[in-house]
Length: 213
View (spheres, rainbow, N blue to C red):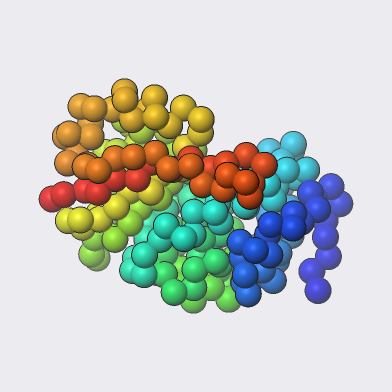
């Protein structure tokens, strides 16, 4: 059994509900991130007491929105949400896109340690990445404003592919400010969904939209 690092937020009861039979892998990732995250510059020094609620559960709540297919996570960093979603959804293939070498090393190490056979890590900037085929969905968490994020994500999708972009309380304002970019990148059916109300202490907001070639 993995030792619990000092200072790590106790596992919330909701974790078992959201991870289901993958909870042991989720726990292992949480413990690894708690132990190595700050020394590796993956998380800040104040994140341990809220690691589960602010980061891990905030990510896994998105899992039901994912289709079976290939999902890209742009700027995945510590693996939030990419590794968390890959743990929760072993039926989905994930492509984690991250430019920083030390973060790529961490991601590859976690893929190995956690036994994740549904993850490929690609070291590249999103605007420079070259994939062998388009993705079915693309997600990102706390990367940049929507109007700046669209050029990094929409081109990676197949015709009919879907954006699933995690945002904060200002999600709708970002949509309203991105009319020109949404039109340029042929994104339709855009809506803001609020996930986890009544389950999470702080709900997760996601901007979803379909990209047409």
